[in-house]
Image (cartoon, helix red, strand yellow):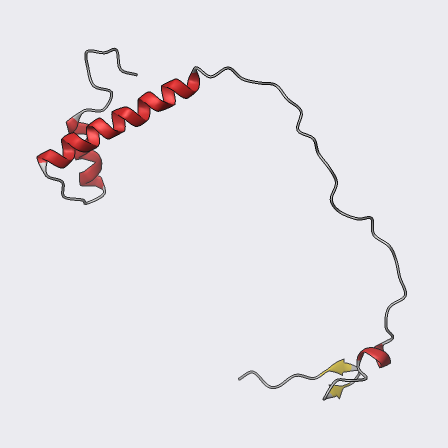
Length: 95
C-alpha cells in the first residue's frame, strides 16, 4: 500500500468517491477522511501479518434423528375446528 512517501488514499480519491456518492465534503472533511481511510488500510496490512492457524472446528450435530410417530387422524385434527369443509379447516375470507 503506502510506501511511506505517498499517502495510501489521496484527497483526490476521497473527492471522487464523494462525488460518486453525491456527498458534499469540505476540504477539512476530505483531509479527515483521507487520514481515516489510510488508518483503516494500515490496519488491514497489520491483519495480513497475522499468521494463519490451522484448526479443525469441532462440529457437533445438534439435530436429532427423525422418528416416525403415529399422528392424529384427520377426524381428530378437525375435531376442535370452528368450521370445516370437505375434510379441511375453513378460515375466514381474506378479501
